[in-house]
Amino acid sequence: MPIRVTLDDLIVKKGLKARDLAQEVGLSETQLSLFRSGKVKGIRFRTLAKLCAALECKPRDLLDYEFDPADLEPAEEE
Image (cartoon, rainbow, N blue to C red; front, top):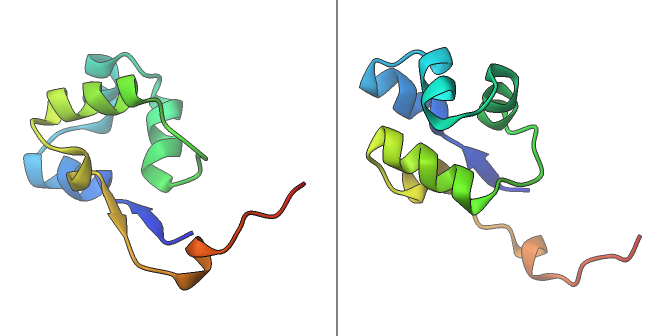
């Protein structure tokens, strides 16, 4: 999937520590680390909103997308 999490870039840019951000938004350091690494399949809008509020940013500042024509194909049933 061509969606990339760019949260690390923003954390560095703002000079924050991930552990402090996790505490501020009410996540465990493990949960934040999994999101930062892109190893999660989804994120709740409420969590995304908390991250945006804490970092004074927009969701587009935390995620990036590179077009892939395969994204327009019907999903396979499992």
